[in-house]
Length: 98
Image (cartoon, rainbow, N blue to C red; front, side, top):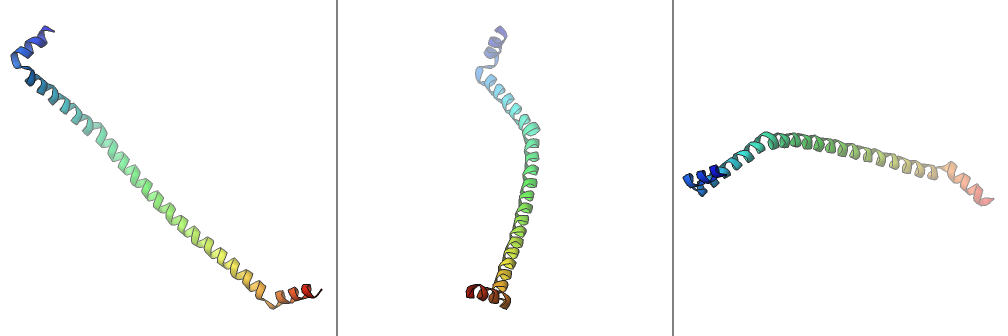
């Protein structure tokens, strides 16, 4: 404890406070550059991969929706063709006459 008091008397409190703050800035800087920046880069790559996967899934969903629309349209056309065919009309008129 006497050593700290001697140092403060010799250099003054503001100088020692600045040295302490300088060490704090150095510690924060090295922590950021050695630990946080690499982790951030890894996260960026992960996010880019996820965005690509989302785009692929979106394209797949669009293709599936188009296929579904086509199948539904074909069934609708088939239903219209069957109900409009002469054989179908004849069977309906027979049922109505009975």
